[in-house]
Length: 332
Ligand code: GDD
Ligand code: MN
Image 1 (cartoon, rainbow, N blue to C red):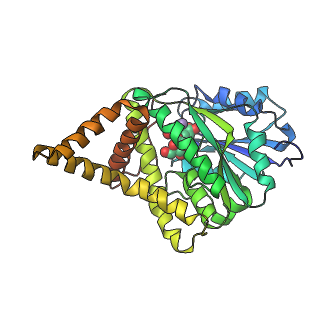
Image 2: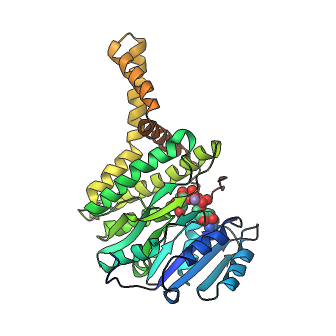
Image 3: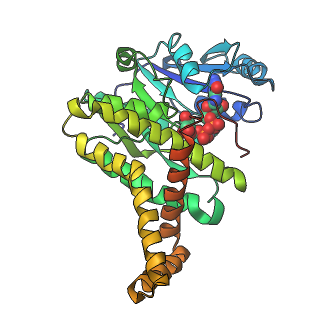
């Protein structure tokens, strides 16, 4: 994979809103990737943080003078999408990598991700994710173990519709063609992958690019999952409008995922309610189904799935009045 690879100019964009506690470590993590520093540019776009994030970024820049650092300061917070578009205007790399302040890359992630772009049909590359914590009742690690496999599999077939903001790399000319990130969809990363795959470019989640992400604790975990589910639902709902002209290699994967995110959660509740009603009416089969469904909650993979359906349902309803495009930071 690494032999004979072409290195390209890369702009790494880090959007920040009140990340004073993490941004130094984050910038060091990017800097210490073994990528030629003359080909690397870091763009931090901050949206009116009140905790001194920008001062720390500037201080870091003074301590590491052999890498180019650009700081974009927005005077008002409009959300991550608009901030990314502001950063794109100053990014000069051929490849643009978006990365969250609270995620760390494993060694070699940048090099390996860039090497995939030697294939001209690849438009975007994202990471697999390791949760730094296993989440409430192991639900986060169960969810990740399953979905990392799904995303890598979809990518081998052609492209995946779900990208990760912890590491999301795009060809800059394609982003320009799209007019930047869509600011109406919270999942800027996934929706951009959907648009590129619809146009016939491969959008890959690869298992040799690994990120470790922080996971909120306690009740904040649930609100975090619901907000992310809201953003994914927005991406799948808006993606439906591309279906009629979607690349045929991507269409079945997109539709299966749209079904699983938009329809499936409701089928679970309908099925479960019918089983409970049936059990009350004296059906032994229904009673056995309810008992089996409850017993399976002890199995981590199943429990993670049921929680995911719950988050998706709450998220769909919540999207009706609040799209969470500017969100409250969860404690991690
Ligand atoms: N400039 C800027 N402006 N940055 C922001 C803003 C904003 O208004 N809001 C959030 N950010 C930054 C955060 O500082 C962080 O670096 C990154 O965007 C992600 O925000 P988190 O608060 O850490 O959210 P998350 O961990 O749940 O993020 C995940 O889900 C989002 C969609 O729900 C990631 O995958 C994100 O990339 C994704 O957009
Ligand atoms: Mn995060």
